Length: 338
Image (cartoon, rainbow, N blue to C red; front, side, top):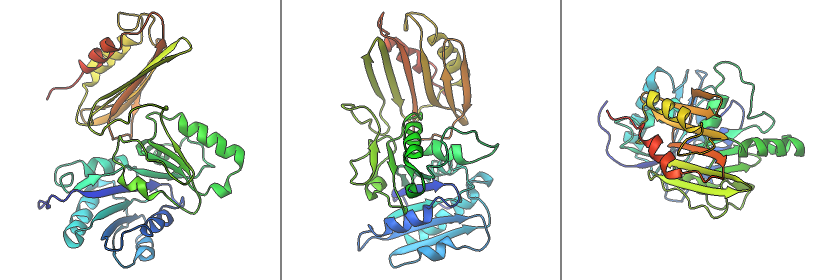
């Protein structure tokens, strides 16, 4: 593929299931485009007759369609070809990508991070729209893209909230706040109205205050983790201590060594004198991202759609005090060296 000019075009992925309101949300964002701004949208529809692209046409907005399939398939070839053409022809100030609701978006984020595209785009926070009437906890059918769409979200937005009752909205909020990794922002809205400030968020940043229906994740007083920089946040309350780590996306962990390390950590030892009550994490390993959920009895692994960084969190008895430095050193000993 010909090399693209290095432009660092701010690029936002707007994903979600079929019919959840992605196109409406993007149209709403257009209303906040600067008068002299040159925006571009790459739209993927599963059918062969493109409709969304026709709806988005307007002054100052260039739309390119990839119809008739899913841009996350075939190693992202359709995405790469479509993006190269769009960036060369339009040279936009900002890029939005709307994949089909049938897409597994983690593959799109992987493609954006590969040589040839990563030099041309500057990825912003992924925005996922969901219907709040659908549970975030499953069960899910095999190959259902919904859990991946939720998993990659930096900003998780419940759209069409006028169609859900108060009890369901409250349940959705609890489910969203319990997700790991925690979201940068959790919001509810109607008619696809999004906070345009989310377009400026880089993965790993704390969400800005919104004037809409918006919940900022994280505890009061936490320092916002800087993108690409390791962060450690610890606290203790009610006889329980917790500590979480965020590591740069560039770091890769060796799977076998990491599994041995985590299995040792959850049991009583020097680092955690009484073992771990719970360990959750998502790690980048060679060739794939993995989520882990562990107790002293079991360590469970699963594929993860998260792509922003590696992060893990441990909950343990507060006495005797956990030795977080030893925990960190143990986990970092599993870093992969090519």
